[in-house]
Length: 148
Image (cartoon, rainbow, N blue to C red; front, side, top):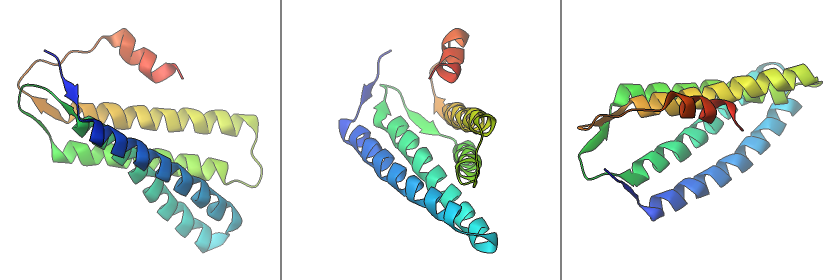
């Protein structure tokens, strides 16, 4: 069975990714420049905005894909994938907004961010409901997680 993509939704996904990237960079600067309660507020809002941007880009990309069978997404699982993206964004913003950052903080923050994005993606894929059998090659799944 083959599928197709709605190129308008793919383009929208790319536009969202670009604008989310700019917003995330700006928010990272605001988190770094602030202190105490303001820092926590910027970190919270920034994590939400960045996570929502990452998640929206991926989810719209998933909605762009269609197959010749009925497809839908299970809402509670979809929202769980959103929280994975927000959590990963919180770790990333916290890591890059530190006054001093060592190599190990960058490595650990990168691993956490990558793991969160992989979790968001595969949780989102688990939300897919289709009247066909879905199977994954475990080696390709591992490669998608561990290869940059």
